Image (cartoon, rainbow, N blue to C red):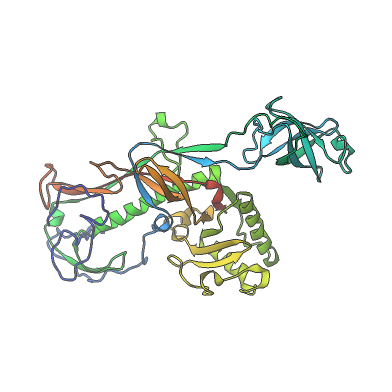
Length: 476
């Protein structure tokens, strides 16, 4: 066979096994028959069925990130992005109902104590002991950063309002405007926009395949149907094709499962990276037992509606994709089965021009609940017993079908990117998106004295999960 000692960034380039229509010894259709001690180097060839049996069907589990996100190059070993904060000011705290002083103020998202940005002259809506009221801020940030004082419009102090008693009570409040007397000065202080910054680092993923020179001496043929649907003949090195397909699966699985190492780097463990599941766990919504089979049919829709309320709190995207395991997918089918698909319960299958089974993308079917559209599909990664289907613990993911506008330093302009996308290391001289190269002394130009042909694979990449608060991880 002919080998080229060339680095390829295109996964469809050299060393990719592609069946040939005719029995021709090409560099792209080599096959390895090596199982149970039988190989092409022995004296007598075995009796061989020419057609390979597809025992497990299409074995690859990748395609999740291809359907959802883009892939973009980056030059650094770290990617940093910022996400906007909430526009309106809302807090939790503890209020003394006799004098209106609020202390222990925490953010509604972080739950941590923080300096508030409520100024004197602002008007707020608050709730104490279930009583909703309007109040005026008499002392705000120009007095102190950790306390403020409010006076209700309906009484001298909060304890004058019906239903509020005691001394210190929990309060939730948000600013809805301001009010000033005639001839008064302007509002003191200014509010700086709030944003959060996040970072991730790429990880290097490697694999390789090798075959000895002796095993390449006898050419044999087998008729196959490839993982991508192509059919034809391969000669002696099909195992390399399986290695490549498995490696491409690893590239996607690593972006989903990757974890950032904590306290292990000094022990020889690489630093890791933040994968999709870790990002949602840290910054997104985690729903446990959402698709519990023990839930009665009468309660299933109520539980799903509770999920919509969580999305409302985040101002979520209207269109969302559900990637589910078999049990979760059937759960939703059963939940919707008793509903009229056009009216009852506000569930509507007319998302795709009233065609329930119209494929949006690789088998999605859709329904609408409230103001949200959901497109659901099976996720083979969760069902396959050689991947996540083996260990369980994950029923599926909800991923927003949206984009964000960010400034790209390489392009020098704002671009729109999916909330979920892969960044890979690349420069003018080296593209590390998906490299493959051949070394050894067999089948082509000699690059070493070893009597083998070795096929190497390398990629350096990380996953960027923007607006993770819009994602949901369904733990089981």
